[in-house]
Image 1 (tube, rainbow, N blue to C red):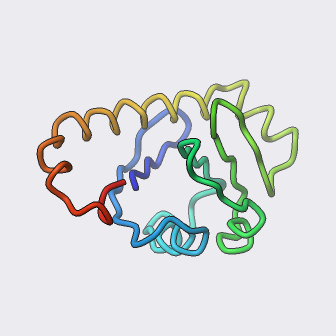
Image 2 (image 1 turned 180 degrees about the horizontal axis):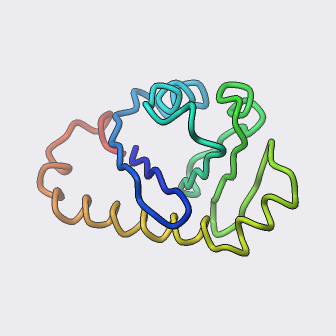
Length: 124
């Protein structure tokens, strides 16, 4: 999992974590372990179309608002419409996602040989 800590248009940190399994519980556990957890106001999670997350279960585990981006659609839980609209207007969500996608592609490209050698259960 690649986590980008993005605040008001600035990259604050980048975290790489290995997930033992991709479930709401495992994802919540890893995110809560972050040194930034107390300071984060909400999470934006981007997943590919093969992954299904129960947002209600995630919200219960994280106790923070979540915006899920999947197939260029956004779902949300725990965030009021006005705040969500403000985030979209300021482009924080799309800017942060674009930066994260660029970083993730770079990691995949630069470490392609290493990634191909990892056991299938370790690959993301």
